[in-house]
Amino acid sequence: MKSIITIFCLFVFVGFTANAQFAGGAGTETDPYQITNRSQLEAIKDNLDKRFLLIADIDLSDANWTPIAGHFAGKLNGAGHKIKNITINVTTNAGLFITLGPGAVVENLIIEGGSITGGQAVGSIAGTVDLNLESASGGSVEIRNCGNSASITGTTAGTAYPSGAGGIVGDLRISNSSLTIASCFNKGNVTAAAAGTAGILGGHSGIGNGTATVLLITDCYSNAAITSTAATSYAAGIGGYLYQSSATGSYTIQNCYAEGSVTGNSTAGGILGRVPNTDGTIIKNNIALQSSLSGDASHAHPILGYDAETCTTANNYYSSTLTGESAGYNSDGKPRQQGTASATVEEAKTAAFYAASLPTWDFTNTWKINEGTLYPTLKWEPESSTAIKSVSGTVLKSFVFEGVLKVAGLLAGEQLNVYDIQGKTVYSKKVKSTEQNVSLPARGIYIVVAGEKNVKVIY
Image (cartoon, rainbow, N blue to C red; front, side, top):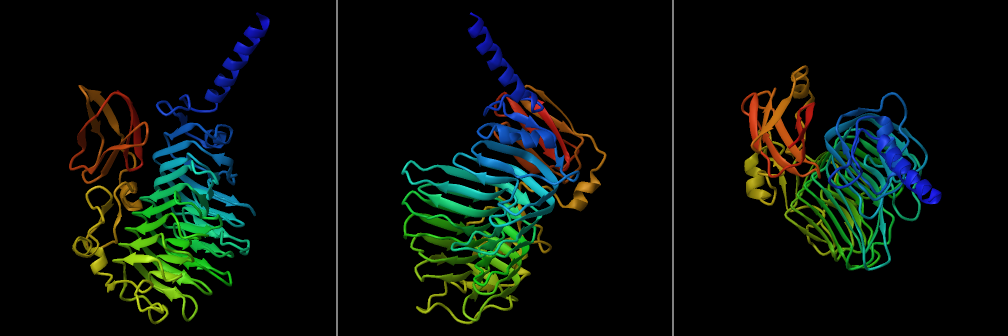
């Protein structure tokens, strides 16, 4: 009996200790651990397979951040919140997480400001995504609705396979598995001494085998200076180096754009740096809007720096004012590297251009555009810093009556987002008045976000 009581008490103590590390929750899909501060964010390392929800912005300016070690296999939902002023200064892999492993999901999170410095495999969300699984059963990682404005720096020179730095993920290792990066942005400059440097996904040091291998980068953008100082650079606006040891599986970059600049000593691309074995690689419906592109005399192109001449490309555009690209097409005369046609800066800031030339871009659910002023941005993104400052001091109030969420304390024209506890968007729209009614699909916990204001609602 004493042994049974001891075991029971130990079980209760362990459960209580895990819960006490967080602001609430049980670490499950329906009741995730709630995070409001640094210590609770750090406690993820002791619960790598659990579910987490940010319910407040977190400022990390008080001390350097130690990347979360181990293979994270849980789910982190930022609910539109920001991790601000992050500083990482290490010589190893670096990011909010060192490694995302099979089953990991990171969504609705912004890394705002600061700097992230590591050796190789450096990114804002993760240094490495490790899905290098030999078994056919595979696994998956998803990164959705995430953004970064911290600077990214990789200080260690490259090795046999590129594993440099990326605005979202530094390095990918994948086999018989899938990685999806969707609706993400990068606004932080990316610099690396290793090959494989880009605005979204940097390098690929894994083997890339298996018919079940799937990489999808969709509806993302980067506005940053991308620089690789490696002798063989593989620098690009979206993806640096995507390695496939056999022409199997599927690698796709679609509905993306990149602006800023790309600088490398050899291979440089507006969208993708290089893919060596490319039968399964598709680059389509993208636009490269960089002001300058710098590489060697034959491997700097607006869309694709270099490929083995079997990559499929379709309907890719580039800026008419781009300077520095290499002349000519591939040796077989196909304009894969150069792009389908050029577009002016003015055209790329109009909805009409995307409707006519890039009709797969979804301006109903995914993208938004400020006509004539800015290139497209993602619908889930908060307004500009000026707009956010203008709502400072206001109070967000809400209550539910007969299944209808009533939100007050808004500003006309402000973006209102409502998420369920799994991070799914149930409402996203600019409001026309100071109050808004939102029909809720079911009972549960909801996060209401408007600018820097947020509130949790239980229905």
